[in-house]
Amino acid sequence: MSAPPSPPRPRPRRTVLTAGAGAVRAAIDPAAGGRLASLEVAGAERLVGPPQHDDPLDSLHWGCFPMAPWAGRLRDATVPWRGRTVPVTPTLGPHGLHGVAWQLPHTVRQRDASTAELACLLPRSRWPFGGRLRQRLELARDGLMWTLTVEAASAMPVAVGWHPWFARPTEGDLGLTVRGQRVLETDEALLPTGRVRQASEAEDLRGGPALGERRLDHAVVDAVAPATVRWPDLTLTVTWDDPITAVVVHSPPEGVCVEPQTAWPDAITLAAQGRDDTGLVTLAGGEALTATMWWRWQAASGDR
Image (cartoon, rainbow, N blue to C red; front, side, top):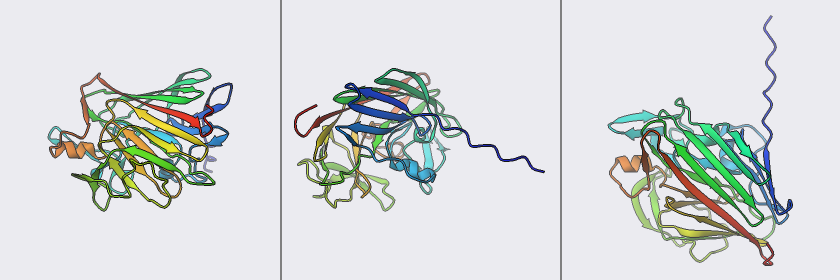
């Protein structure tokens, strides 16, 4: 007689941060890629919530997760590296998507009421170069600071970024400002061709339009901080510093993504083809890449 199936392993509890005497609340899910699972500001949830079923690819469509050790698509899930081709696990058809950290459980290393530090190993089974990702999130009444650090175990290419899913309002529209007008040309698989072009009228968000029915999915390569997301009752400003060089905008019906990242999508492939302006960084063993993003918010009335 066969042994009964093992009971499901309990899911680690979310780590909850609060600020402003509980007026702002954030929840981090260590088991779900160390992502920001919830952000409640001014009495409303600002992020898309988790799906109701367990399709692994649904993990790409909620909260805000770190992208590491690459950001965006990776053609054919391969890393051209110093004369050889290093395969990684495909996640979107034949391609790799958004690194591996979003699929890995994180460990909470330290936390208090408004700050959390998390880490995860980048296993060689998923990223043959190895390494580690560290995260630090600091919540305040009027904003959030989020730092990502990738530490290399051996020489490797690396990029990091964030993939937020901002929730659309139940009433009214969402406005978006991204200051930049040069975007990557992409093919039918949304992989960059290596050419840069001017943004189309729909893609040009410098004037801060209401998104309406715009369905966008493009990388702005000359984005200048800050970007701005506007609900009818709240404005959230996204700010970054070097080495962030690009912002991807994605606006399907279920939410809006504004993704700061240190390199272009498919930067590894493009750099191997000779482009030297993708933002891709090469680390030696023991070196690290760090990037920081800030969110600041203000109620439409002017009250913080």
